[in-house]
Image (cartoon, rainbow, N blue to C red):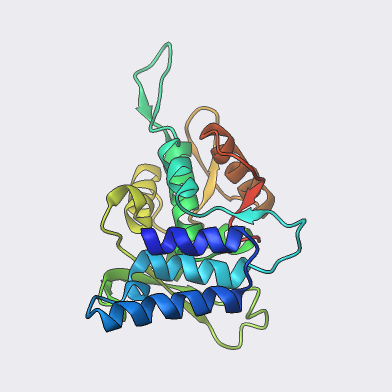
Length: 228
């Protein structure tokens, strides 16, 4: 947590990616010299570093990526229930979707267009990732860095230690509540708390992120899913 917060602070002060990389290398060297575990291989630090590399250095007018600890506050502020006057309360489908959206966007370092295009078929089964953690591999056939689709980009989504910060826990909860087994992952939810078949539009994802940060009362902004 301390190392990832430090990297985010460096990025927010305008440090270049190369400068941040030098700081991270120094931290790793200090840990090795003290015979301590390498902090750079943890899932959280890896995700933060990947997000900084993909988004840092964008034009000043571009929205800042939503990252911890502000991300955690936005996730915690997503509603969990919907209450009604004339029917029993229900789990908030929009809240479950937004938690999945925020955590998938962060841990996968995904842009909003990539989030909008996600389907269940792109998710592999859960197994042990190269990091040694349990997780699932997400296959991106096209992305900003792979627009021709010649070679698929593979992204590991780890199962985080804390369930409130875990992308797979949020994803499983959303898919289960929504009854989604195939097709688009992130979909529209009606005001009546019903899931539509249509996927979210990239601009809708941007609006949902702004709504989540406003709901959490976060400073600064606007924010985006890694500056998509």
